[in-house]
Image (tube, helix red, strand yellow):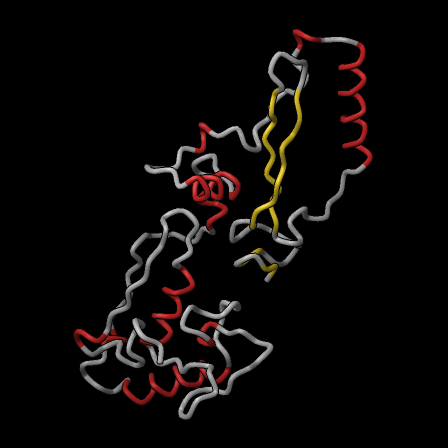
Length: 229
């Protein structure tokens, strides 16, 4: 039994038509569960192979395949048919709330998380660091030094060696330019330049995190939950 989730096919029936979710306010981790709750409310069946439900597809983790929401952000054909059947069965009822004109909570809100982060000069690296550190209070990406254009070769320490290093870095970038998305694996590289105390220059400390949903991974797809979909 899926405890704590919406009662199936209860969208228009008083106190039963409710769904509760939790979101951390930074990574949009409540979106999948919100979609699952809505799907159940409007008549989707569970893809768990039990009596009266849809067959379980071992290789296809659809939205209604688990109580946490399957990996694929879509419904199986069986679940879609269940919604259609429920709709046409109750559409003539004068109390059906599906006849109401829906209103968006946020008008014209069609952006992905990656676009939302950009509005605040953030990316997935800043958000991941904020969650990892357990920082209290709002996220302020402007204070982070991750993925910032830091000059590792200060002009105050200019020398032939520094100039040669900059030239090698610049020439290497030109030789390896490409039109292929760097997010094909839906991973984002996070780098912070660490200066060595009382020494010239420093080093780059780099790691990877999951790319934000909506990050372009090829010409026709974007990253969703860490998968190029």
